[in-house]
Length: 165
Image 1 (cartoon, rainbow, N blue to C red):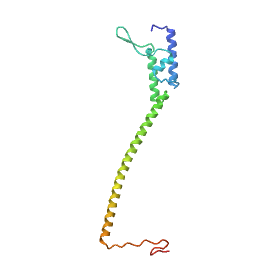
Image 2: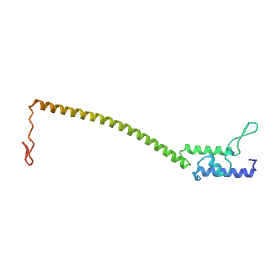
Image 3: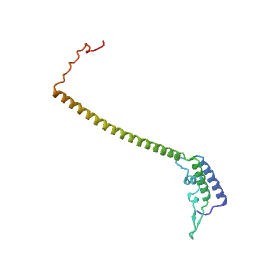
């Protein structure tokens, strides 16, 4: 790109400042972000104009709009540090990251609770099995000794012995 006139440079700088204000206020184009690429396309200048250039002898010189790019980045950082995010997609991404972290925490808690309940179930089933075996053993012991009599089953409609009715 060849040299530009001072008039063109002034118009470009004004377009960059206007685009900066729009982007930082949250007025983003569809599919755009709050970054230098979108700033360049909104201002109608090449993105490479925001970066330092190299001379033929290897030394660097500032890009024509590098100071405006630095100003944009500084203002963007200030807004982010203040808790204001001009890019709604970035804010949505942050909200989703926080929600994801919360859900992971809840999932870990549920997994721990589930493991505790599984352990409790194993212990209870073991106790029930041991009690069942003890009942079976006592029934067999009682049947073998012969000194235990069975009570007759109650007849329907007749009150059992000792009833208060």
